[in-house]
Structures are given as structure tokens and as C-alpha cells.
Length: 145
Image 1 (spheres, rainbow, N blue to C red):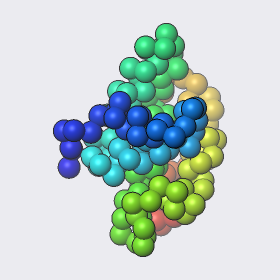
Image 2: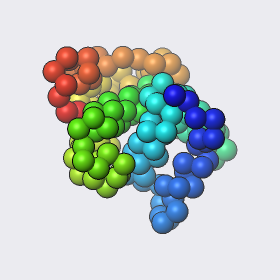
Image 3: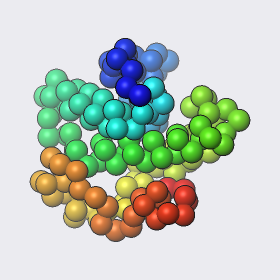
Image 4: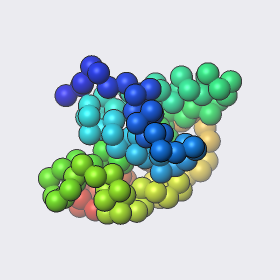
């Protein structure tokens, strides 16, 4: 499902076309676009590599966090995939954000991870699964984040 013409820079430009600041909502929007255009596995790589490159370019490579990046892509991807099957307007980000307001909460990952786990060097550099609660698709109940 990977689309060769999807790039992090193009997604960033699209999301920032009418904005002056890249806040959390823009990050979720970029992630949603990546998931919709190339699927969750490819979006994990696309978004993670793009954020890591951007952090290095900004002189702050320590800001990149492998677990946080992947967890957000997987959470957004879980809901975007469900929306494609059930939503009357699956291609509208504003409607998506309204249906899934938990995704707009920057602290959402605290439902799944202990802060001490995310603070470890291992979690910063490699994938670490949730240690507080399973993600919605891991529970098997299809529940919301």
C-alpha cells in the first residue's frame, strides 16, 4: 500500500499551508494523512524518519522518541482504519478529530505507558510496548483510545 510519491516534507507542507505553528493537532493531522495515503506500517517509518530528521536539522536530535512516534502513528492508524469502514466522511480530518477527541490530548499516551517507561533510553531509541494498559486493538474490544 506504500505510495512512492508520499513524502514527509509534502505532508508537512500540506498540513502547514494555513498555519504558522506545528502544534499537536497538526502532528495528528500529518499522521492521519500519512496513514491514509500509505498504510500504518509505512506511515510509522515515514513519520518517524521525518520527525527524526527534523529534530536533527533543528539541532535537537534528543527530541526524537522512537516509542512515542510509533505509538501515535499506531493510535491514529487504528482510528483512521475504523473510520474508513464506518464514517460517512472518512476523508475529512476535522470530522475525524471530532469523532476521536482523545487523539487531540497530548497526554493520551499516559493511558498506556508509565512516565518512567517512556523516560528510559531504550524507549527513546527503540519500540517499547505499552506497560500500563494495552492499546485498543490489543484489548480485542475495538474500544476508543
